[in-house]
Length: 154
Image 1 (cartoon, one colour):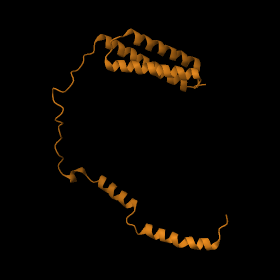
Image 2 (spheres, rainbow, N blue to C red):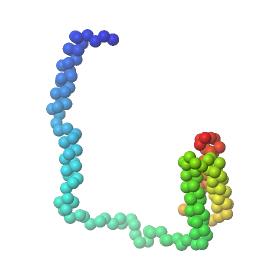
Image 3 (cartoon, helix red, strand yellow):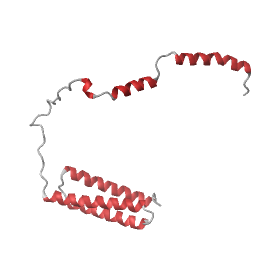
C-alpha cells in the first residue's frame, strides 16, 4: 500500500484536534495520584478521634465453640503428620537438587506413601482437622506418584 501526500494532509487536522482535546480535558492522572499520595502521608491524628470498636451482636458468649481437648492419639497422629511433612521437604529437595537422582526421590515418595497409608488405615476416628490433613496428604502422594510414573520429572 502506498501512502500519498494528499492522504497525509487529510489526517493531520484530525490528529491535532485529538491532541488539543486530550490537553484540555482537565487534570492528568499524575495530578490525582500525587494528591492521593499526599493525603496518605498526612498524620493520622489530623483525622480526629477514632470511633469506638463495633462489637458484633451476633457473637455472644454462648455462641463460641467449646475447646476440644487433644488426647494422646491425636498427639501421636500430629507427630506422624509432622514426620510425613518433613519427608515431603526431603522429597522436594531431592527433586530440586542436581546431585541426587530420581531413584532417591522415588524412594522418599515410596516412604511417604507407606506412612500415609499406615496413618490412614491405622486411625479410624481422627479429629476433623487431622482427618482433612491426612486426606490431603494422601491426595498429594497419589498425584505425585502419578506425575512421577508419567515421566514429568525426567
